[in-house]
Length: 117
Image 1 (spheres, helix red, strand yellow):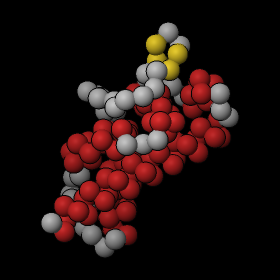
Image 2: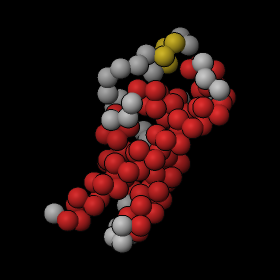
Image 3: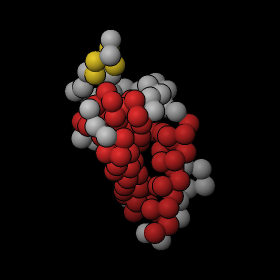
């Protein structure tokens, strides 16, 4: 995504390494959403979350995908991501929050589909 300080966007992303803090945060949010639907989350849903995560990230709108990628996979702080994208830090945090909600919703929906099939 970053090449010589420039962002290359477009296309799907294939991640070989998914940071633990991203998996844990999404797994917790997925479990919360499933409980809200009165569905018991799997005891350890990290493996399924990890499996679904890449697809959910790739399905994000481009700007949200870039924020998630730069923050979690490139290790940039929100202030650095904001600078790269020409946004305020607050806007960047907002995009990040929306992206994580969309990822969690997509994965929770996948869990729900599996539960009813």
